[in-house]
Length: 67
Image (cartoon, rainbow, N blue to C red; front, side, top):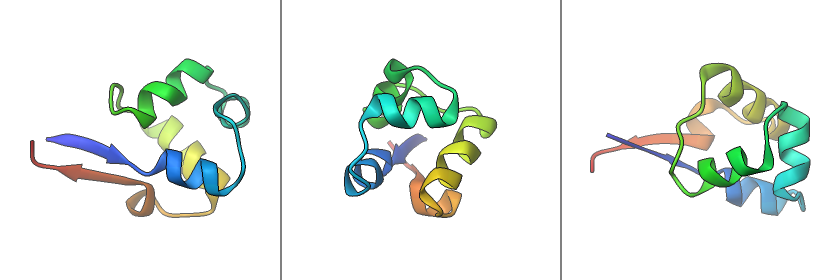
């Protein structure tokens, strides 16, 4: 199973840079980049912090897909 995210879409819609989102959720900019590119799966704590920034549900932002 692969985790697909819509982080980039929501971040760009909000006019936010990766570094700005990273600061808001207590992560590194590189971590946000890896999440957006599907190279990293977030911890539950990080996932919850990101959805709070965008005021969406986990299901809105993250989706498991079959490879």
